[in-house]
Amino acid sequence: MVSFDYTIKEPMGLHARPAGFLVKKLKSAPCKVSVICGERTADAKKIFSLMSIAVKCGETVTVKFEGDNEQTVMDEVHCFFEQNF
Image (cartoon, rainbow, N blue to C red; front, side, top):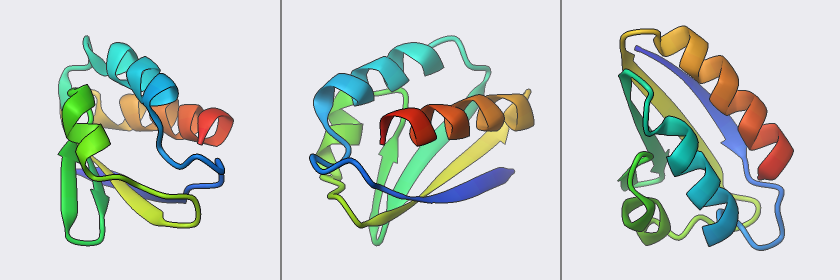
């Protein structure tokens, strides 16, 4: 298992359009990916799960990866977060 923490900088928070791109990017990922914000946890491969945790600007999330190629997937997702959130 590997993970990273990220503070959301996007004024609209973790909103639908980039969240949808993230889900699409992760569809073929061989590992489990979770986004955790406080007590709320979402499956990053499911758009409704991601949207249900309602992450706002300034909140810090932990993105956790478990399974095959977790390090490679984490590096790609970390870059995606920096560019989109």
